[in-house]
Length: 480
Image (cartoon, rainbow, N blue to C red; front, side, top):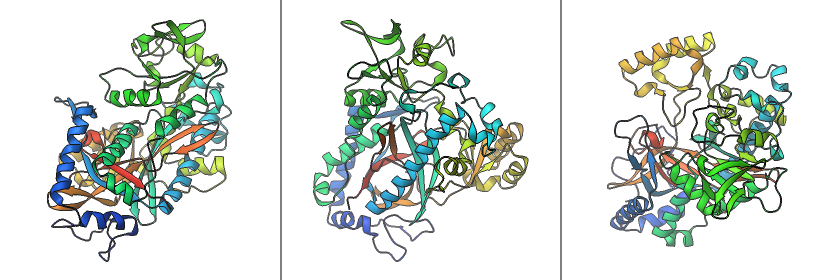
């Protein structure tokens, strides 16, 4: 049965089924295949996929809970399917946004023209903990700040896409995108013979090429690239290891590195070897105990001085985190227009800045119907989903807002689109978002076709974060 029992035409945009009950064109070939399949076979494949993820060690650590053991991220075997024309539109908007963010970062660490023009408040930068004054006047190799980024996108209608947030510090999830595809290829090879789906498996080699193209002035010959991880206890360690392995790069921790003759070098069996490009998965504060947090055991003493002297490229560049600050997000349409001379191709979600008294009053009045987020938050932590909150939770969050309004922004509860997941009763709709992954170098912008679709596995839930119980699914972008 194509649709499980209880599937109703909903007020939410259904990416597979039209309001008239027919199948939307991107899903037609898949639905034809699914209707001819034995549900028991698909159920067995689901169990095989779970066993594969468990054996491979594709896990996620949920912080802040007493039982914060590593968990499997639920994986759904029904792909999310995007047409070629839909993807072209998304790609243009994503590239425009990433280029504008990189230009913004260069500007605020140099002449600060956008602040002088009054398009972004100076207080939003000067008082922001993600702003790094030590980057003022410093030119990163190739002029690139946002080497790797992820743009979270939600859909509310056939032609309605919104950017939910930008991820420019250390965006995660690309390993799940790649493993999801590999799993689907193993489970259902006949589908890929039947349906023309664009590849994603070239992401690691594209990442390596993009990073190598940003080599520093001190580089001689073929750039040496390494991935800096905080270690095995980090929630994203699997991804760090996965990317290093698939790029053919070294996976290093802070204690593997030291400054030798003005270069950052890694320990090898032949002695210390200079690194040209370091893809760091360590926050700014922990990069260098001599220049930032003196108690950091994760970074490299002296790496900041090598970076300033042009001896190493750090990706993403230090200070990039200001670009994905949620308070800054509401100014993105102005930022895009300021640096590109164009209107934003992908709109923002309407946003109230709680630091502004008028905005705060409206948010407090409408708290039960809004989503409220910490400006520096991530992973779904520190967030209030008003329609799903209890009176006690609303009261507690109201007190937080009144005590520290500048720490929060608020947005309407969006009618997120739904895509099908496989259940014992057939297909059932669930809400999703999408994180496409973007690489930037002096040679241009590369956007992997698709990205990571995160899905709320619970019926009616709008929370898709893996840390909050959400799952993932393979994302297919169709060929023309």
